[in-house]
Image (cartoon, rainbow, N blue to C red; front, side):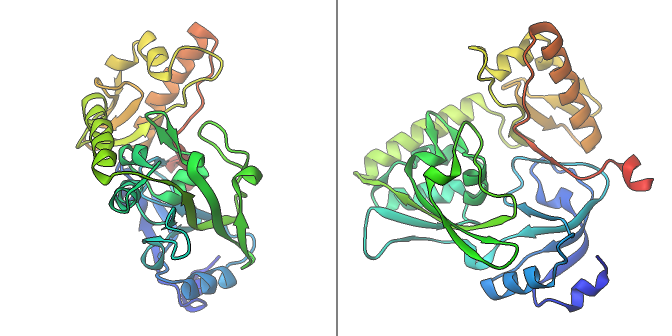
Length: 307
C-alpha cells in the first residue's frame, strides 16, 4: 500500500494518524491511514480502492481497544456522519433502527424517548452499536443480542448483507459476524413501556456504574472476560493475585474495580499490556484459569516496528 491511496478514493484519509487520540486508554501508535467516510458513496470508494492484501481495521468509540505503541498497518476505518442516527421504523413502532456509529448510551436514550423498553442496560456501556453487536456487549443482566432483529453489513467486495441472530451464533462477549464485514446498522425489536419507568431503570444502572466502576479516567472497561469455567468473576481472580494493588510504570488496575486497566498519567501501551499479562500469568499459575482478553489489541510494538 502506498500514498497513491490518497488519490484513488473520495474517502477522507489521514496518513500516519496517531490512534492514541481515538482510544479511551489514550495510547497507540500511528495507523498507515485513518479513513473517515461521511456517507455510503465514500465508503464504497474506499473499498474499491483497497488492495485485497491491505489490512482493514474498524474502530468505534475506542473504549474497548488497546493499540500498541508501534505501527498499525493498513487502514483504520471510523464510521461517522451517515451512520450516527436512530429512527423508529415507520411501519412498526416497536422497531428501533440504529446506525453503527451511534453510541450505546444514545441508543438507550432514543429507545426511552420513544417509550421502548429492552435496551436500558446500554446506558452503562461506553461504546458504539457496531462494536456492541460484534462483541455482544452487555452489562447488568442485558446483552445486545437479546432484542436484536437483524444487522446490515457491507463486505469488502462491496456486497450488502442482512444477517439475523440465528446466523451469528451469539455467545458471551462474542459473535460470528464475518471479520471482513463492516456493520452499517441494526434493528432492535422492543416493547412499549412508560418512558418514566424506563428512565428510572436507567438511573439505577447509571448509579451502579458510577459506584462500582472508575469514572473520569483513561480506562478501557473490563480487561478480561469472566471465565465460564468458574463461579469466580475475573475481578475476583485478579484480586486474588494482588492485582488491585499492582502497577507498572503509569499503568495500574483500578482500586474501585480491579478488572479495569487505567492509564494513570502518560502510560505507554507496553506498560498497560505488560501489567495485564503479568496478572493473567499469575492467575493461571495459581488457579489454573486462563483469563481471556475482552479488550481488543492491535498493532505492533515499537521494537517490531523498528525491525
